[in-house]
Length: 165
Ligand code: GNR
Ligand code: NI
Image (cartoon, rainbow, N blue to C red; front, side, top):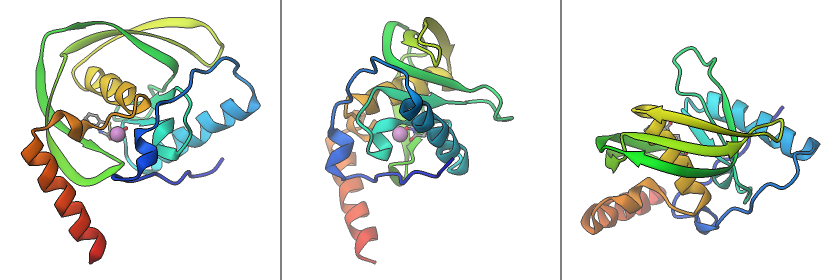
């Protein structure tokens, strides 16, 4: 197992669209193990492969407080969305920024699991937000893209300034 390096905004690699997984081999299984380790070590509730510079459609998620509800999803597809929630969101790739993002309150998704089987998953609340956030990452989208232009500009300036210190 190994900790992976997390990329930070405005790294252009965060904008690369991930490729589908067609075969679950030892390399893919190792990436998944390392992604779980990296997510737990960073106290994140989810992590997308894009964030560690791997442009393949993989995300891991565990929204439980006890760290015992792991999900590994390949090739996620959101099938249905319902309702609206407006909750604070953060991202391991956008350090120090938290803001309210409008998301669907409930989602139904389909993906492939570590056994190569298709499965469906329904989530609401934090899990729904996380599924949408991670699926966005695999498409090169960050949560700050959902904020107003003005807020995005402020975030860009703050991050530039923090980098110079
Ligand atoms: O740790 C995380 N918390 C979080 C909170 C609300 C909505 C989404 C998330 S995901 C984030 C970890 C991360 O950056 N995943 O890509
Ligand atoms: Ni994120």
